Image 1 (cartoon, rainbow, N blue to C red):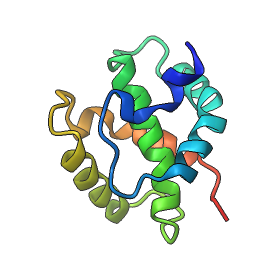
Image 2: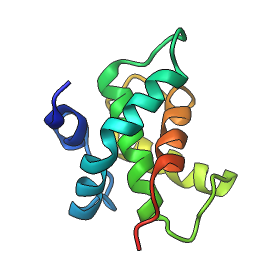
Image 3: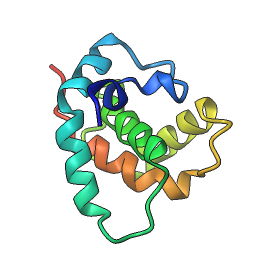
Length: 114
């Protein structure tokens, strides 16, 4: 998979309003490792469409910076991200319940941006 496919979330799906160039660069730098780790996590399981799982991982990665006071996954954070995802991904067939594990993985794998 090429770098453009990994990094350009906007090319296949809309970005949340909080997505910015810093997040795009951070995702570009981290995407290969996050995606490789995710592929190991879901090995042998029913997988999401590749573009959706990549978008969910990037979304979670960016959320780490978008919600800096929420340093750990919580019910409150999940509700915010669920609303953000539904707002920008209205045409995605996969619902929140199907992608939240990938979002969480992306969030937890992200390094906090100083």
